[in-house]
Image 1: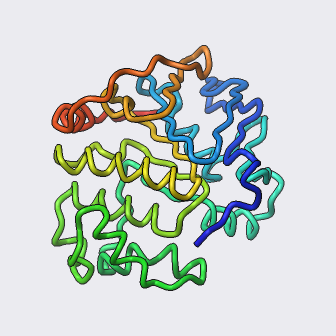
Image 2 (image 1 turned 45 degrees about the vertical axis):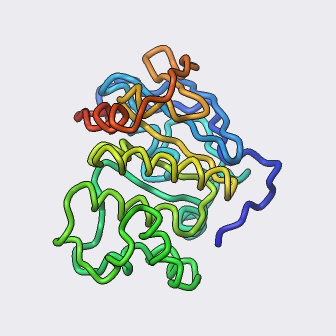
Length: 249
């Protein structure tokens, strides 16, 4: 499993991060924030404010106009393509709005992909499927699953190699009430057990209530928001099922 290079180093640091899109529209301006190992942070904000753009920058899927991003103390902007790819597959786990589950692979094969890419045994895949409520389904194919089940496969795949940083974009949006509650508990447990930091982008106040910190992204930057009491599982899933579209990418 992936190990922290130095547990004392923050899992993630963003320094002076800025991004513009066509026509000079400013999406992010001089963002600074740090995530410690094991922190579970929710980022909220209106549609189009740049939440998904921020995730893409941290993941190395897009490039900032200025500023730096450090994962485990390594500045990703200073890495060549090969080194950036290695860091991404070893240190990051992803759950984006689209499931990105490969249709021609079984569920177990999908979840095992990060293990195989990191030369780790694939034997951990069935246990992670069981942890997200899909025990015994490893030989099924994605075509046999509902949307909520596909999201659980994506979550299992993000967690299986114990990454330094988990990036989750509306991870409970397609889950039933009981599963939504269980999945967020799984994220928290994974963060605490492995020292991983988790960033969850969400529109749901109820889902954000399970985080250690809530940050709100707006035109004025990224600021702390008050934590709300964690709701019961049914209320959590009902709120998290309200998905927004059209975020700036």
